[in-house]
Image (cartoon, rainbow, N blue to C red; front, side, top):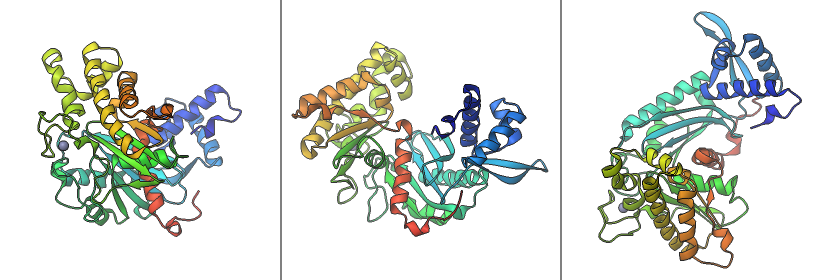
Length: 392
Ligand SMILES: [Zn+2]
C-alpha cells in the first residue's frame, strides 16, 4: 500500500499523493478537476502527481466526457482482470472492485434494513457493480468473478442457505445462480467466516500453519475452519456453526428453532437487550463503542459475551486442536474488554502445553478480512488461462 510513499518525495508531496490515491479508490474514478475538488489540492498539483503515478503504473487515464467537455478519467491501474468482492452483513453491505493483486479500485458501502430480503439486496448489488464498473471505465467482461460473503452457511449441493431460520428471507433461491444470470460472470457464495479463515490461512497470520480457526463475533457468531490446509465445510456446509451450540438449556428460542443457542447469549440482540432498562434504545455498535471507552455497564455485557464465546471456542479447540485462532467482527473490535475474557476462557477450558499459541489474534486485515478472503476464493477457483493478459 505504500508503493508511492517510498521514494525521495518530500513529506508534503507524499501526503498529497496519498490523498489523490485514496480519493481515486473511494470514488472509483475521477477527472483531474474532480480530484482537485475532492482533495482540495490545486489542479496543477493534481496534474503533476497524476502524471507521476501514471508513469509508475499505479494509475491509468481513460478519455471520458463530463458535462459535454472532454476530460481524462483517472483510475487505479487494472491488471489481468477485475474481481468483485461483496460482503453482506446483518445491517450493511460493502462492494469492492479489486484487481487480481488485491489492489482496490473502488469500494462502496451502504446500510441494509434489519431482516433484509434476498431479491431487493441482490438487485442493489447488481446495480451497484454496474455503476462501479462504469465509474472506473471498465466493461462487464473484464470481471473474472464475483464472490458474495453472507452471514450464513451455504449448502454446497443446492446453493441454498444451509441452516434454516438464520437468514429467513434468503432461503428460497440459490443466490449465485440469480446473480450469475444478471452479470454474466462466475459467482461464488460463501459464509463470511469461511472467507475470513481463507484470508488468514493464505495471506494472514495463519499462512504458515495447517490448522487454524477464524471466529466471527459479529451480529451473528460463527467459525471458519482450516483443517490440513483446506477450508472445511462439512457434509452439508454447516461446519463451524458455533452460534447454534446450546449454552443455556432454559434460554430464549433462537431463529433456528432451538433453545438457548450461543447466538441468543452473545448475538447483537442478546448484547443490547439487557442494557435497555438502564440505557434506553442502544444499538449494537453503540454498546461496542461505549464498552471500548470504559462504560461499566456496556463493558459488563461485552466481557460476559467474550467469556461465553471463549468457552464454546474452547470446545472446538478440544476437538480440532488448531494452531492459531484469529478473531474478527464488531465484538472483537471492542478490544481487550472482549478479547481478554475470551482468551482467559480459552486457556481455562482448553489448556495445552503450547498455551501461547492459544491466544486469540485479531483479524489480519481488520474490517477488510472477509473481502480479502472473497478475492482469494475467486482467484483460487479461476482457471489461470481466464485471466486477461497484458493489462497495465
Ligand atoms: Zn440457533
